[in-house]
Amino acid sequence: MRDLSNAHWRDSARSVRFFMLDGEAAFPFLLVLVWPRLWTLFIAFVFMGFFTILSRFGLSPSVFFRMLRGFIAGRHIQSTPWWMK
Image (cartoon, rainbow, N blue to C red; front, side):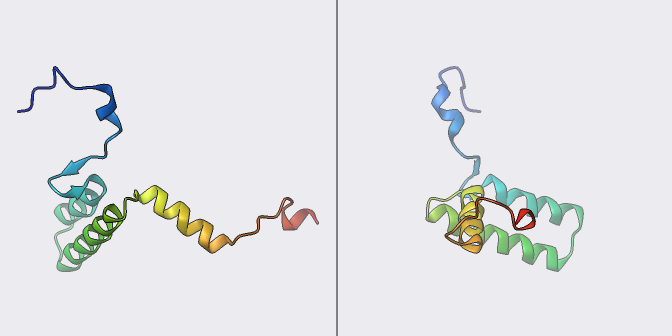
C-alpha cells in the first residue's frame, strides 16, 4: 500500500488510472460484471479503446464532448433563440 502521508494537494487534479486505463473505462467493465454477455464485453473493449485514444491526444471525455458539441453547433452562435423572432 502506498504511503499517503506525504501526498500533495496538486495530486488531486490527476485523473484516476488503473495501470494504463482511464477511470472512465471502468464503467463498461462494471456493466460486464453485472450483465455478463459477449456483446457487453465487446462494448467495454470499444470504450476502453476510445478512452485510450482520447488520453493519447491529451483529452478528457468532457473536453472531447465539448469539442464535438462545438463542431456540430457550428461557428456562429445566435444571440436570440429562433422562437423569439
